[in-house]
Image: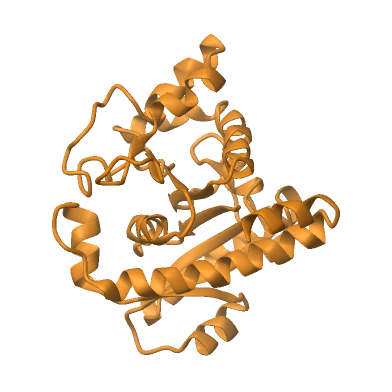
Length: 273
């Protein structure tokens, strides 16, 4: 399976994109709402269902107490209406001021997510807007940088508009440096484009010098459902494009795993297929 992190240089639909990919996945999936600005899915898409007693904001305390590994899965909630456990969510922070408390816990969470990956789940990480500490480094105290370091792919979400493409450029520069020096390699970096504007994927790819790995339809009706509530019927336009994006994203992951671990990944890829 795969571990995919979604990020942005500026607000551009990362949460909706991550949620669309999770709900459209043909495989069991876990969405980690790791945006340090706070989570919105529980109060939005899930319409306030569930208890604030579970979620990412509780994991720092569990880590300090040495119970993180045992408690980790107890903080998942179902995204499925039938609660089958095929689509799971690790809800995000309830307050942005909680983010620094997780600075020492992200590495442990990353290792636990690798276990989820090995047990057959696609893991999608909503890391929101990047937070930097210099022109070439992501923050390790205010951002889940450790999750990006171990991800199979880090996708910058951008709309095909001039403003969004311009905002993505500095984020890509930092991420390329970060992944080359501290992650699994700069080739983990890609673009997930939302087709809102007039620029083509080839134009964006050429301008940002970064491969386009997936395309999502511009679908305000679906975005409204993903943002405000699960009990409306979501149009198929976005989900259809998300399923297609899954295919191209997983092709990238499989190719990178074979290159990085030519012996061990053959088994993983074979199981996934």
